[in-house]
Structure formats: structure tokens, C-alpha cells
Amino acid sequence: MNKHELDEIIACLPDERTLFRYFKDRYALMLLDHFVGDGKTIADIRKSGFSVLLDKPVVKSVLAWAGNGCLTHNLIADYWKEEMHHFVLTVDRWGCSRHDYDQTSRDGYNLVLQLNFSNEHDGVYKKLVKPEYEQLLNSYSHPILDWSVRPFKRETLAWARIDLDFSMNEALIEEVQSDWVRQAKELEQDVIRYKAATGKMPEWYGANGSIDNIMHYCRHVIQPYQKIWDEAVLSAAIDFIRNELGVGAIYFHSADTGSQVKHIRYAKPPRSLYSHLPKRFCFKQTDTAPGFLLKDKKFNRRYRKVKNPEWFVLEK
Image (cartoon, rainbow, N blue to C red; front, side, top):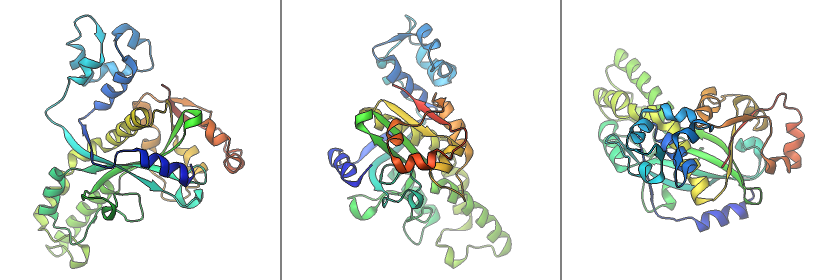
């Protein structure tokens, strides 16, 4: 989308903190909640593309209260687990109008939905790791929360980049990514090597906590987030696109087609994020690209060179 469109969208969104609570497999309930509306029978769900979600333990727990065999919004809304993660959602912009530099499908800009940690995590992280500088486990060259434009500071766990067209009622999730999870794993491996060699962290690393405290953070504090970050940020993105933006059809890149149209030659993202993840969310495979991309002449010139194109789509 162009910068004017993006600025108008952001101007219409709330600027204050938006809380987002997530527990393992909550995405299944969120998808079903949108599908069932005022209520659908289990038989109806089994006939739909969301039938696989009925096997999730969280869904079975909710269905245990459906005495009449009908799943409703109220039943889903009343279900919460004790083990829950709290996040803060923020939005931002990404792009400089060049698709090859920004890794976007067309020239222009993306809307970024950022999944940020709460103070619950950040306080423990700072106490154990004692980072010498801000955003130690993130990259400033990526679309993480800009602390200079917000009245609060949060570390960013993950983000989703989104392109959309209101006139065609379509959105494309360009990317889901987490620097934090990857760099926390690298930090753990570095700590193991440094401990064996010197028994302490090198001064240049920027982590001033003790070896034991840093290892505790990497192996215990961040571990629960490593297990759910991808489904949490995709759940937040789908909910945001449908309920805040009001867009119906949501597309998602496949690994190979996405890399080609976004001109990603090196350091390609994990294939599972663009294969297993959308399938878990009941996206259907399709060889048809989003209609708003097909209206773009530059995109079409590149797209004609793609062999056996593949996309995922989640229809309303």
C-alpha cells in the first residue's frame, strides 16, 4: 500500500496500549469463535475446514460444557487457562517503497503488528541478563517497537507485516518473525562456549548478568515463549485484520513463492513458518495470488516467472 493509505489506517487505530492474552492453542478457539458466530453444532464444524481444530484439548474442554452439542461465542469467551502469557500490541510502518530492499511483494509499505512482552517478562529479563543496552536481542534494522515514539518501553517478541486492499477486501500477511527467539538461542550457545573457555561473559557482549543467571533466562524464562510465539503473533494478526481492519480474505505466503516474489535469495526464513504454520491455522492452499497484487504491473512482471505458484488463504 502507499504511505498515505498506511498513515490513514494508523491514524484511525487506538494509540494506547492494547493488551493481548495468549495460551497454548488459543488460536483454535479464536478461529472457531469467528466461524461459529451465534452458534454452530459440532456436526456443522466437522463438515467445515475447521474440523481438525475439534481435536485440540482446549477445544474439547470447551465442548464439554456444550450440553446441547452447539458451540457458541459465549462458551468460547468464558474459557481461560491459568497458564497464560500477557502481551502488548502496537502498530507501526515498514518500507521505503522498494520491494526488493524491504522484502515486500509489491513496491510500497506494510502495516506492522508488533507483539511485545509485558513488564512481567521484561523485569525478569533485565534482572537476570542485565543488558548493557536496549533491545540486546533484537535488531534495529527490523520493525520492532520504537521506544522514542511511545510513552512506554517494551521489548518486542515478534511481529507480523501486513499488506492489504480495502476495495478488494483482501489482506496478505507478508511475514511473521521473531529476532528475540533466535538470538536468545544464540546467546545460550555463546554462554556455553564462554563458560567452558573463561567462566565469564566477554565485556563486549553487552550482557552483564552472571553466567548462571543468563543460562536460567535462556533455558527457563524464555522457553515458554519459544513454544508459542509463532501461533501467538499469527493469532493476533488474524484477529487484528478481521476485527480492527474488517477485512475478510487473508492470504499467507508459501515458502518458495514468497521468497521469489519478495526477492529473498539468502538467509531465507524457516520453511515451517510458511508451510506448517498456515496449515495449522486451517489456511487452504491455492495457486491464485491475492487479487490486489495481480493489479500491480511490476508484481505481474516478476510473478510470471514463478513456476507452480502457491499461496495460502483463510476465507471469511
